Image (cartoon, rainbow, N blue to C red; front, side, top):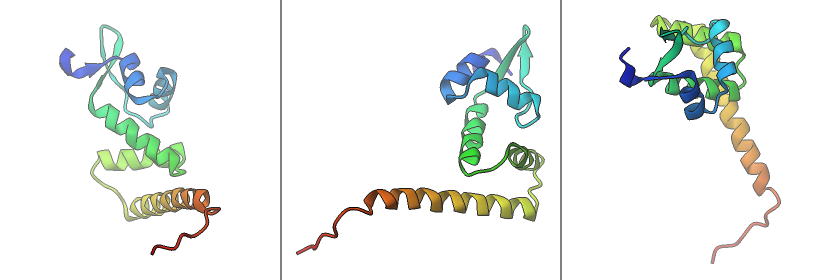
Length: 116
């Protein structure tokens, strides 16, 4: 990686809303790939911003860290099994339904309006 295209862990944390300690933890348990090092500092490519966005979406959808790690690993290897594909589809569908249900509940007390 060249210096222009890398972010420090602090910069990555600022851009994604994740704490630097959380990013280090997710690396240590293998959910995120280990960062390249320059002069002893972790350096991340801009693609890690998107990856953490996907990570956040998966967490909100109710995936466990193990499931997220499995999805990322198999995706990185270009081999997403049918089981993982089904798990991801079901999890994301449940999250969307949950979000829609919450939004609908917010409108539940409104009186129907007749359009004339």
